[in-house]
Amino acid sequence: MSHPEISIVIPVFNEEAGLPELFARLYPALDALATRYEVIFVNDGSHDRSAALLRSQFQSRPDVTRVVLFAANFGQHMAIMAGFEKSRGDIVITLDADLQNPPEEIAALVDKMREGHDYVGTIRRQRQDSAFRRYASRAMNRLRERITRIRMTDQGCMMRAYSRAIVDAINDCHEVSTFVPALGYTFAQRPTEIEIGHEERHAGESKYSLYSLIRLNFDLMTGFSLVPLQWFSMVGIVISMLSGLFVIYLAVRRLIVGPEVQGLFTLFGIAFFLIGLTLFGVGLLGEYVGRIYQQVRHRPRYLIDAMLEAETDD
Ligand code: UDP
Ligand code: MG
Image (cartoon, rainbow, N blue to C red; front, side):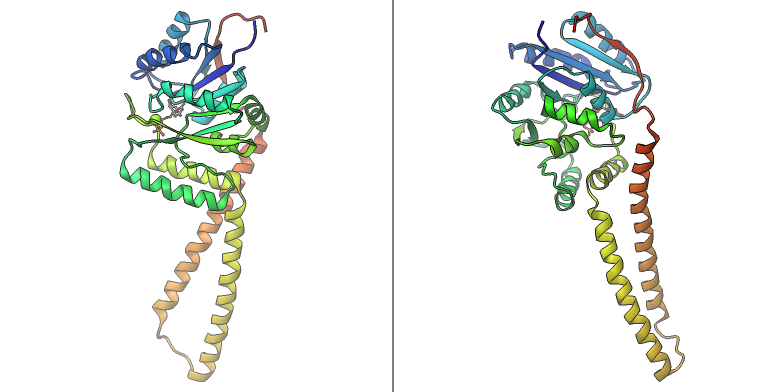
């Protein structure tokens, strides 16, 4: 038996409401490709019936379904990483479980990969998200493109295809807190992007708050680039030169005009601004130190409770 051509990796966290429809649309779309495929679901410690639904789906299609059951919630990207480690296909495609990425678009991704690309990103044709989220993500995109060499029109769309070589490279990284599409992009030699449809989340709720979106963008900036630190030291140099001049100016004034208290609030303003800047710098340093801390601990990135798969001879 040869290995599958296509592996689909789907992280699942509390998606019981949407899973039945996902199964109903995903499998026909894959069968229509008429090639060998496998679907790897990674249950990221769901508290609802997701694991049970995955188990019964495994029982009805054991030939093409494999399920990784995490022992706890380790996050979407760790779930994808675990799926990558188990995947065997030449083309590995990631998908969200909430049907925001229509499974019918898989065929288009596969076509692009067969043309010889090793990374196919996607752009949501009509984003079904709030205007605020659209605007915020456009601004973050622009910032990320200045800071890192990662070029992604639509970083929020997880439906992407990766070549075997890229997935192997990602597996070798053992990164702890990362953003898979960006990590994959850094290894891509012939990346491309296509437009795909985008739907409302079919059921359940988004797992991400504004807070975690901010966190994600920090991961993107500090996980892939030193530019924030470098910019910060440049700002530090400029400000310390300016304050040096300011101190000289104040000293000269003291000699010429004598003691004075006017402009006290201006001084306060300047001091507060500098304190704010310093705190930001400490926080920024902390982002990097935190990443180093997590990475050097060498703790297991996730714990697998069980794996559901048919007996294979490879
Ligand atoms: N997800 C996960 N672990 C988590 C959070 C989310 O595996 O801790 C999965 C979730 O089930 C879904 C995907 O990651 O398949 C994207 O999550 P969601 O749709 O909530 O994110 P959004 O589309 O709002 O960015
Ligand atoms: Mg979603």
